[in-house]
Image (cartoon, rainbow, N blue to C red; front, top):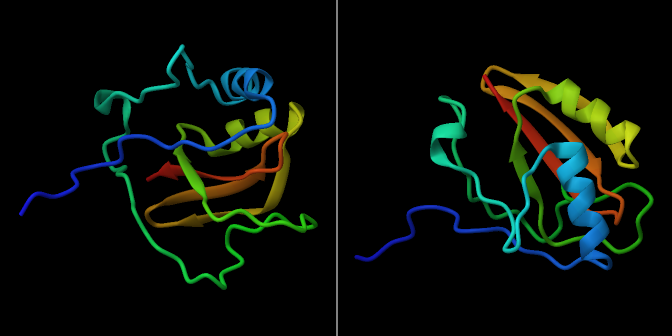
Length: 125
């Protein structure tokens, strides 16, 4: 059977693509070109992987506290320094959500970008 072998991209709408692209470049260090960003396999940490998971429609895991309209997706970015990235986010207009959590497979943190999209960060262990 033909099958999916990975994530080919993540795409979502923004009110101001130029400013939000610049924010992601400056705050998260994502190199964004004319057609977006690419993440080379050799740059991904050894113990990291790409996950695909469906959540029940009633989950509040994607919700941004205080935001009336909730999003139907959640992007998880791999990071090399969770607490460093969260500090960058907070210093540059992002809003931290909840407290970071640590598990035997990694550390996780959450924030809302300047347009209110909730993003999850994962530092693989």
